[in-house]
Length: 303
Length: 300
Image 1 (cartoon, rainbow over the protein chains, first blue to last red):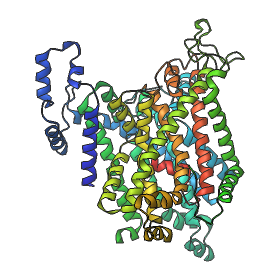
Image 2: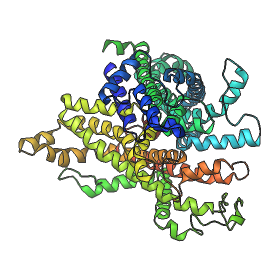
Image 3: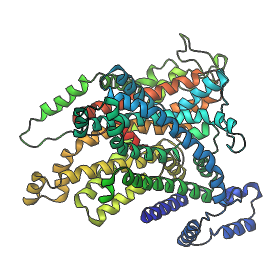
């Protein structure tokens, strides 16, 4: 884990420093003069050798100090933390929606495999996974915001200020991302449950006279939970950082959009900080999934 | 890419078997048909399109779908149908070339890592894991930022993003076959490692790679659309579906067709590749996961 984190940090730093363009010159704009420019560069440590810059940055990052934005002169850690509630809201909302769709439909589809319902669910998930999420987002705005006027087309309100308004703003972005995730999860739940249904213990349970649903709830679901948790983890990792375009469409102030703006502004420190945060989140979610295995499957901890 | 079978096995029958299995799958067949139309559009699109991609008729702007303009016209009076048709070339081009890059880099890395193992092998795979731990679209955005926006750089970026998936699949498959009798036999008669990998290992791990190629084409086209949507992919005046969506977004209330048709083109293309990928999987490698399952891993 520590090696992976170091690797990610190195990759982030290298990649960001490969981006052409001078962040200081860009941030000064028309205020540019050589003296100010040199002072700014020295202040940011950009006049030092790259290796030294890296060690300084890494040392700071370990202590939670990700440097200062060239653009806004604000602490990057603060900027990232400020965006965290929006990112978590969207990831949480979308994942909740995905699970609400995927678990019941996936289980039903597996238990009644080969039925019309199974066919419909499989077809719907095939469409769901092929839809470009940003296009779906635009279509939802057209339908629910512009035509029907039920929901706001974009923007974000903090849940601490106005929970109802927060939910209204969250609905469309969460629907956009949640339906795609839900389509992926449905298929996973279906195949995991199908596999568990074919095991010997299910035959034993049937033989001793348990009903179909008792078997599903008591024997099948706990066993199907492990592969499902893996994918839920991967999906969460994706939702926490991979929804940049949806954030752009809904003017959602998430961390993905922070990174995108930083690319456009050549704001090294902000880009480094936000991408590092996103990659680390992915690693941490994977670690949590591994821990969940041990909890869900006593055999895993013995290995 | 060809499927090579060990000497003695009837080559044609195996290939014919796979084809007939794919063709018997109605969904995969539908996908293939759509892809054939798209390929045709990519080749002859610009010459058969009723209007030029950038032919403006300012007096006809924001016309709804009609017999003259099947998909309506945009804010500059350009024919949306013609633009959608002509944009097929760019999308398919990015899809095919970027997946080619991912294949060309990922498969050799995975094969070497799987065949030799050891510290070098696991170091290579850790490197792949690091690439994999970046959110795909952000990594692509960062690479495009390094190299500058445009078609070529979008292809390189998407290729690098999808490289680790091929490396993982190749490595896993090589590990499964590296101690097979035919590999040991080849080694015993003095074949070099390079020859063993090319002539004996590669033909036997090709099935999962073919399946993954089809699925990755779908995701590459989605990624290209996303990059172009952000203005980082295909550049004007060349039309692209993602860019058309981005441009049409501002007029979505008065001219919804500007958003609907390019999106349907992306959806149709991606779904066709997915359906063909699923069909190929059923025919070649039934144990492999379905398109949606592999996307669950891939997308993150």
